[in-house]
Amino acid sequence: MTGASVRVGILVGSDSDLPLMQEAGRLLAEFGVPYELTIASAHRSPDRVERYVAEAEGRGIHVLIAGAGAAAHLAGVVAARTALPVIGVPLPGGALGGMDALLSTVQMPSGVPVACVAIGGARNAALLAAQILGVGDPALRERVRAYKAKLAAQVEEKAARLASSEAGMAPPRETR
Ligand code: RP5
Image (spheres, rainbow, N blue to C red):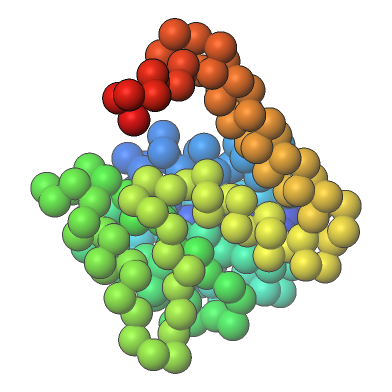
């Protein structure tokens, strides 16, 4: 999804991050949030990152999502260059299974916040972006509310299914 009305810019450090981070795009599309996805590496192409971030606000982007693995400095570098909210997604795949990316993303110095989601948490990043945009967009906020209501309904349904199965039966009184 691209165009003049893009509201969320998703950056990934490498094309190897795409399969996971495309999930964020899919969820934004479900919410009807125009987004774009591009590759820009804090280490391999710092000029491209800087250029993208410098232009983002002027292009109407309101939230930036940065997904990277290993020594994941992308979200922090983006946050250093903008007053827009930045959501970092630490990605697994490095030798440390994402712990490296998690710590690199979350441990920002005071004054330069990154809203860091869980390792591989691309969907939550999209959801958080939608919630941020929803502050000024009641219709979008309603769509987020409906999404959460659907999650709750799914839990109710699963609990009901479990309760009506043998495994979900209350244990006999004497074993409690
Ligand atoms: C990071 O290094 C990228 O975000 C990616 O997760 C990781 C490995 O990149 P490639 O070597 O697969 O391009 O900068």
